[in-house]
Picture (cartoon, rainbow, N blue to C red):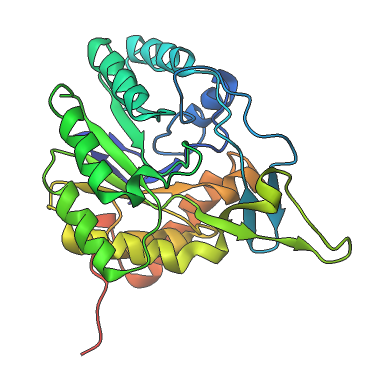
Length: 310
């Protein structure tokens, strides 16, 4: 009932982790590989090891989470080695997430992937505020187009882009117009909603240390924004560009709504952090239950079929 395919590979279900959650080490990645997730993605890798921002940098709230992680990761070579080993073991579909700390580092990382034996999918994270004083790459439309234009002069392997949330219809139009110019495999919407603030009322203070308490918001707070981005891009992108929906997935009904808006796969972040890899078994069971309630025998029966009012 829940089987789906991605790039011609049949998956047991549409669920993945969101990069950044439960995927830092090879041990955590192995746990994901052995879980009920249909697929999984590595931690977003930079060229070099990064310790990340000072702690506390992540805080679970009643309706979600706030974080300012600072891209802690074990470095590009660590994760490339991991996926190459799994590839040798016959793994059919893998997702390797990368981002650079500069324009040139982005190009350098993707050239390394192109020149490597890696045959899986690369998730190019354009939604990290890596350069102080500069917006996230995907909020700079001109820079995004320039970067992707250069990337596709040499990159021929499957490539998806991870995007921040957009809040204006004009921005959906502009970004979709840019993305449609390139042979992208997918778009991942959304990353966390940036620069939220959560307060501990009893202590009258913020709950994370970096940036004076400002951080990315995830969880239940952001589901309407995530669904809007999935829906807007599905309506605007070329049909052959798939969509991974991310944001606000707490229950199987949330997964259903992402698919209804047009998501091909659905990633889980905050809830995975709270519950661990067992969350995938619960979510698949709940998704199956709502599909049975509605009389759907497979995901294709309702994918992208959200109705509008007459």
